[in-house]
Amino acid sequence: MHTIDKICEIPATPENGGFYMFHKLSKEQIIGNSHGHHKYPAKFIPQFPKWALSQAGDSKSITVLDPFCGSGTTLVEAGLHGARVIGTDISDVAIQISKAKTSTIFESKLNEYYKNLQEVLHNAATLDYQLTLDFEGNIGKNCHSMDKTWSNWFEPNDIAKIIAIRKSIHALVDTEIKDILLSSLSSIIKKCSYLDEDQIKVKKIKDKVIPEVYEVYFESTKRLIDSHLETSKKYLNSKPEFYIKKASATDTKLQKNSIDIVVTSPPYINAIDYTMAHKYSMFALGLVKPEEFKEHCHEYIGVTERAVRVKHYEQDLTFESNTKIQNLIEELRKINTTTSKNRSYVVWQYFTLMKGFFIEMRRVLKQGGKMTFVVGEYNNICNINVPTAELLQDLAVDAGFNVENKFYHVINNRSGMRLNRNSAGGSIKNEIVFVFN
Image (cartoon, rainbow, N blue to C red):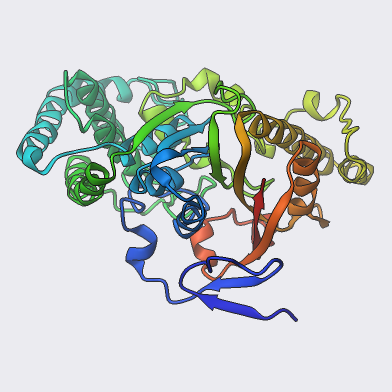
C-alpha cells in the first residue's frame, strides 16, 4: 500500500515514485483564468503546467510547446507566465477553443464587443427563416455543412439558427472577439440538441427541453467575454506571444532545437473518442466536411475503434522496435474476435504514432530541454492490462530521452475525466507525471 500525499499544489521537488492526490482544490483553482471556457473530455488541469513552468526559471525567455494542446490549458498558463507559447493539435475544435482562450480583449472595448454580439444575432435572425426551410426540405440528408444525421439530434429551426450564427460571425469584417464568438457557438451545440451533454458517445434524450438558441448563445458569449476579460488583463501584464496552429504531434513543422519546454498530456488509448465528442461542433462550425469526417478520424493518435475497418486490422501490424508492444498486438489478435482484431489495430496505431511523437519532440527540443508528460498508468483492452505509461517510457528512452523524475497523480475527481461508459475508460485510476530531459 502506497502512502498518498494530499496536496493543493505539486511540491517544488516531488518525490521520485511518490503518490500525490489533489485535495480541496477550489473551483476557481481549476476553471479560473478562462479554463472553464468550453467542456472538453479528460481536460488537463492547470496545476500540472503551473508546476512545470515554475521549474523553468525565467519564463519570459523560454518557448513552451504543447503538441496536444486540446482546450488550451498549458497555453493559458504559459501565457500568464509571459512565455513564447506554441500550441498544436490535430483537432480543429481544439484549435478554435485554444485561440479563443489565448485571445486578448480590452475592457475599454466592452461596449464594442457587446455590439458585435448583438450584430451577429440580428443578422442571424435575417437568415434563419430560409435556412429552416432548407433543413426541413433535407431531412436525413447533408445540409449546410451538417452531416445527414443532423435530423436525429436537432430540430430544423434550432440547427438553422446555429448555422445562421456561424454565417453571421464569419460576415463580421473586423473584431477581436471572432474566436470567442465561434468557440462560444461550439460550446452550446449539445445544449441546443437532443444530445446528452454528459456523454461523449452519442445518446439521445427524447424528452429533453431544448432552450431557445439565440438566448443561450447570447448568455454564453456574454459570460465568456466578461470572464475572459480578467485573463486578458493578465496577458497584458505578462506580454506573452501565442502561436496556435493545426498540426500533427508527429510532424509539428517547427524548427529543430527551437523549444525549451514541452508540457503536454497525450490522448488516452481506446478510452476517449474525441472525434465523437466534437462531431457536431466540427460540422456546425464548418471545420470538417461530412464526407471527410471518417478520414479525419484516422488523423488522431489513438484512433477510435469506431473508425477502424477490416482493411486496417488485416494489414501487417508489426512493431519491431519493442517486443512488449509486439507481444501485446499478437495477444489481441490471438483472441480472434472482430473486436480484438479491431483493437489490435488501435494499439498498433497508437504506439506507432507515439513513437513518432517522441522522435519529433527530441528533434524540436533544445539540448537540455525538458518535457513534462502526463499519461494514464494502465488501460484495459479486451481484459488485457496494458501498461501504457511503461511502454511510452520505453519509446521515449529509445528516442533519446532520460527520465529525470516520475511520480503518480491519483485521480480524485473521476467525473471530471468525462471518459466513455465502457470498462476501458473506467480502468484509468492513476496518471504518471514524467519529466524527461
